[in-house]
Length: 273
Image (tube, rainbow, N blue to C red; front, side, top):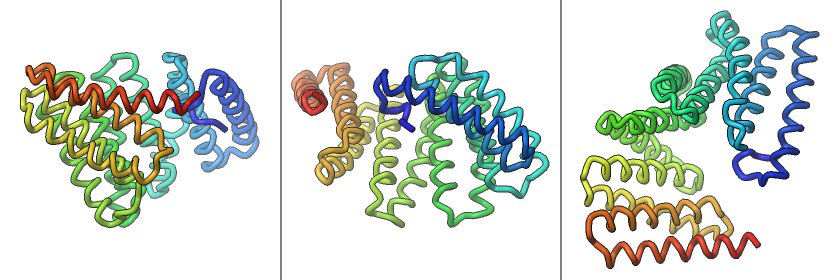
């Protein structure tokens, strides 16, 4: 099955059909077996399908499947508090609901669901603190909460969420310094902190945070020149730096970073032909 995050329109349509078939198969299994695991797997299929719908320009059509997942997972989680997989799936359902609400600009609702997912991920991390899966999800949940707070212009609480996430990302980076995904997670924290600081008028601190993200992303791009995700993120950093410099009258520096952003994006465009 394809990924809704990087599929083109044609592939997305094929992926939607694949996920829809998976949902139908899971529904048949759950109807016959009625076990907690079959219900959890059906809920996960609903969430996977909803996620793909939401990332292929069909916003609004994902909510029904998220609701179906929650209707299955809430009673399962209440009955099976010690089942970490069911609790994890419920947290993921709340997270998906937060994303759906954010896409619809329902930011107060989005914040509620992101906070619910964060609370469950934190509980799982407390139960199994050595499991990187849970610490990773806690970090991302803090970023989700921070993003929605930022969209509501609650800049200082948003910054605190991102700073918490950054500290967690850095701890994972020290434990596994060669993990590219962990290093990239650190760059997201730096980049988002730069955004919040810029909105607070803390220009030099924002620029420094963007530079830290650029430094790591440049290293990752050099290590794997074919990683379009990293190169695209690097171009975004350059563009954000340029915008902030331009806004503050540093025209020569802004032009330099706009040129760097253009160069990376031009290369990406030519490589995609």
